[in-house]
Length: 183
Image (tube, rainbow, N blue to C red):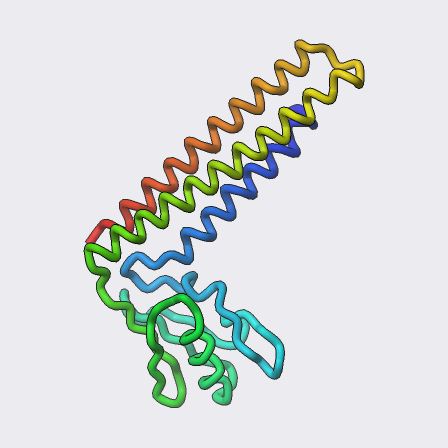
């Protein structure tokens, strides 16, 4: 791959990876530890990712269990979950915290699919913005003794990359939508 194109390919891969991480945090009726990825717990005055203050397990398909390394953190973890956008009320027995995921209603599933499609569209916009930046950079190459044919080839390759990653986003949107709509 041309060195000039590699930069834009890397950026597009990062956009896809970001979308995948966004999708991992959308709960689809089953318990998925990744829904807790963005939660930070106040650990002695420092916002710390939940995964670093306790062990997260999935004892049942619709339940997450968090066993904090220190018992004193239970209240802080509960508070962090309550103030997050997870939308589940935690319960604890003094040793572990449990999050029970309710069955998703049909309406909620449709809302989640809309959200998935919106995030997919945002991903495509990011890919198109990267293409635009690349095309702008390639147009400036004419001042650096790069032939018009070479510039046209770079732009064509960039368009092919854009199409490839847009199709990958469509595939991710379809997969996540099916996962959410599967009862």
